[in-house]
Image (cartoon, rainbow, N blue to C red; front, side, top):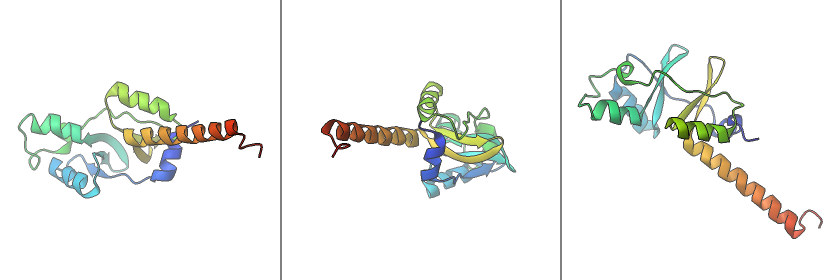
Length: 146
């Protein structure tokens, strides 16, 4: 079974975060510097939200707010959807599609283990399917009997 844990083993556990009292501009600098599309919003070690490019587009740009004057806590997504490390990757893809999200923080209890993106999940599924196809082709060709 494809699990989130297998994605994190390859990708790593690095996550980027901001505090709720930082400005949106601070978060945008991290997006640009790290070439990412979302940061976790933390209160010490506790996850209190997520701020994404989608939040920026819909809650700052379209409302005529200014990123240097707006705090992350004013526009972050508060109800963060998370998964555990043993979550099935296909179920995560379905969840992300149903909820129209692109980032899933991975938690074990209250501890953040990492974050996966919809791209990470798609790539894992494609890689797994390629391996299955190659195995089946070898089996059909008699590769296991030679």
